[in-house]
Image: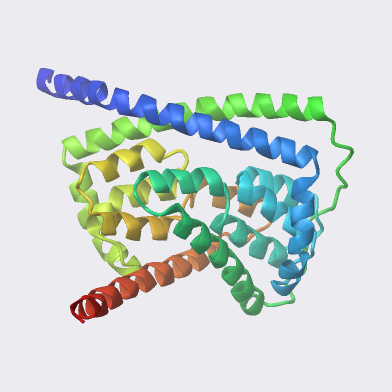
Length: 316
């Protein structure tokens, strides 16, 4: 018993320095980005960007107003997108298409920065997620039957934006978010080290091996995959960065995992929230799994092409 306790205490002490640094980095980034979005929203920049995207949203079967929900989610988070989406007259079909697009591409700045911290190029992440959101919107607009027209949210016009009330609302919500993020980041990072110390991660890897093989992912990425699917990228930042820095995963394995989870993550809380406002939950999960499979196996094919032909070019 004493041996177990001493091992646990050693794990906690070893995890604290790196976790504190990651917490500070994530909190600073999140607060800065969210404050900038408040300013842009007050200056009517986000609605202006949304207006430019209206033609794209008509193509994916959504009303032009849905662009504002997507842009809000793109730069902030799923909560922001939902706040706008519920003010629109959207059917079950439209809410599902919009929700799938938002889940593909939300909180872009913070989450791309987290994945870049693990060594994966942020530019690729942004391009993959943005194009995947559009592609998924087009695919679902073609696949989902057009007769699903039940309205799930009644439009409510947003009143005049007042700066100080907006700032107060932002400050209150941000404090709550920061507390939540710090608690989750500390808990996950310590949990990851405990599971690794006692061999649980190896067992999880064996159990998930068949599923991860379909996804094109290495078995040793199982813990990262679980973190991303349960709590998402921003909350799981410390554990993801720590796991990637241990050397247990090659950079190729980290990239493959990131290209999967950048599309398919937070499949509990975010999917539940969007389902609660009318989206079809199983479509949100399955459609993004398919898109992530395409991305990962596409990247594997790219690596195969590089290995096959680049050496030939260098010998000429």
